[in-house]
Length: 199
Image (cartoon, rainbow, N blue to C red; front, top):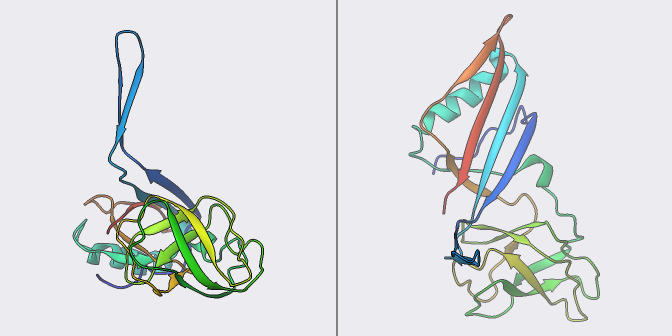
């Protein structure tokens, strides 16, 4: 792991993709058969437009220091640093041995609607995988709620482990081994970078 991706200048645009490989086949009668192993990862494409050399240089140096796809680093997505939900309290995992696409939690502000919203990113302390909440969640009178998430839990979290709901760090690697930038007249740099989740 080699630190955090530079936060300035922020990308001009971000494309966020969820890659969930499936095997689809059609029989002679056109019946569809689908299989999946449940795998999922985030793929992020970041674009910078109109950078000066001074602005581009730290990004270029950081990317080069990754040695292609060799190293990993962390980054929070600028447009998703804060959740849509209220997300107040001190949320933690509620119970050991949890698996699947739901996560029992506690520690939220009691009796609060919309603690997390569909589309919010979620991290679990001690894990590098990032999950997405797939349905709005409300905290009950004890500050507990069950979050529906995608994908299924990659690792079984321990009871009372903290949840990360703000500035959720993605652990990423370069999507390729080539660093390329376009330089326009006047030393104006345009740069595109594909990053893949690593866990």
